Structure formats: C-alpha cells, structure tokens
Image 1 (cartoon, rainbow, N blue to C red):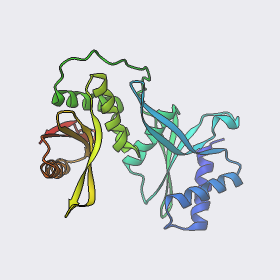
Image 2: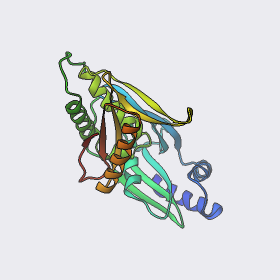
Image 3: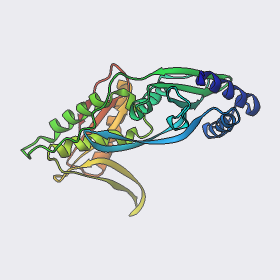
Image 4: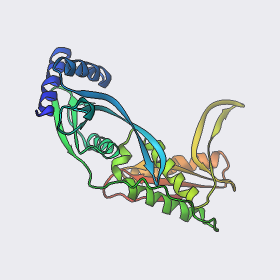
Amino acid sequence: MDYLKEVEKAAREVLNVLGNGYKEGEYEEALAHELRIRKIPYERQRNFEIFYKGYKVSDGRADLIINPLWCSKGGKETVLELKVGKKIAEPHRRQAQVYMVSLNIDQGAVLSFGDEVLLEKVEKPKKLFDITVVKPKQKTTVNIKNSLQESAEAVFEYFGIEFTYSENAENLFPSAIGVELRLCGIEFSKGSYDILYKCHKVSSYDFDFIFPKGEIAKVEFYDKEEKLQDLKEEFEFYVKLFNIKKGYLIAIPTTEDGTVKLEVV
C-alpha cells in the first residue's frame, strides 16, 4: 500500500470538514483521528536524542511516523512533518530531514494544510552521524578566539544547515560547541545579566558562554549580511551595557553559501 497517498486523501478530508484557518495542533489532532478511522498505521510525537561526538546536545520530536515498525504491516517507516501554509518551503524540508537523519528513517514527507492540501516527499541527506564518544584532549594553553572559531566550524560541518532549522537549534548548536570547548579543556558557564530600571529587574540578556577571565560568547543565526550586522550591533550594545571585558559573537549561517563567522566586540 502507498501510505502517503492514503494520508493525502485523509488530509483532504480533514481540510474539507474543518476548512482552513486553524493552527497546526488542531489539524494534527484531526488528521490522527482520520487516520484511525481509515486504519492507516501511525505514531505521534516520537522522541529522539541528538548527539555530538557521543554526547547528547538536544532533543527532538517528530509529528507523525506513518507505518511504524511495531505495527508489523511491512514496508518502510515514513517521517511526516505537518505545517500550515499555502506552500512548502525549504525550512520545512530541512526540518523533516533533521528527523529522518536523527531517527534513521529513509523516507520522509512534508504535509501542509492551506487553501489546499500539499504533500511533498523529502530525500534523506546522505550524511550519517558518528555516535562514538570522543575523549577530552590533554589540557594545553588555548586561545579562546581561535577555539571558538574552530569549534563552531566543526559543529557546523558536522550538522550542516539542516539542523539550523531544528526546533531546538538555539540550544543544539551552543551545546555542541560547548562539547568541543570542553574536549579542548576550556571551562565555561552559561548565564544571564539582569537589565535594571532604578534597581528593578525588567528583563535579562543571556550568554551561551561565560569564561573565567570575564570574556563571553553568544551563538546567533543569520541568512544575510544585513542580518549579521543587526546581530552584531545588538550584541555590541549589551556587551557595553554590562561592561564586559570582551565578547565573541558566533554567527551560524542558515543558507548554503554562508560561512561561520566570529565577530569580536
């Protein structure tokens, strides 16, 4: 049985009954009910862990797995990522790829509810990930700037831009960079600085890395040079506001032609 064709028919029924204008959660619940009615095997919200050099750096959760192995129907499992919109965009495909790689499932698709139901198959990236635990290096004298640049480049090369579209990208990349730094013997903490108004806390600003000598670093994502410049100006403002000795802005690209950049403030 071609389960994706059956899923598409089920999704059309959902849209026909509900109409458009609902959020993703409502469509997911309705689709799951329609799949049960049609006896299409599925699993919702399968959890998975993301590792970097053998160390867990984040969690993930797939919307639907069609034809899960435990149902014993034969054939392959398929990751199905649900969206709401009039078109399927590249970030949607990338997110499905993240789940396919992390769950080691070869087939995937994105289904979008909009004016009509759109269903697009997604190819699994060829790159596989090594989960071997890497041991720390012997401590030596290190340069924070060089270590941050090398660590960020290593992490980006390992995950690629697919994982910049992960729901937990803002935690995943700093965590993986942190693994690299600790493997090099660099100690750090994560923390935030309070923003005060007449001694009253009104907000806070987070930094991904705070080093023993007072230097700090933060990971951000950019798609255009204009975005990078805006991030740098904002970062520089807070570095000066908190009277920080030195700050490093780690900029991770979300486009194929982008490069990892390190801005020093």
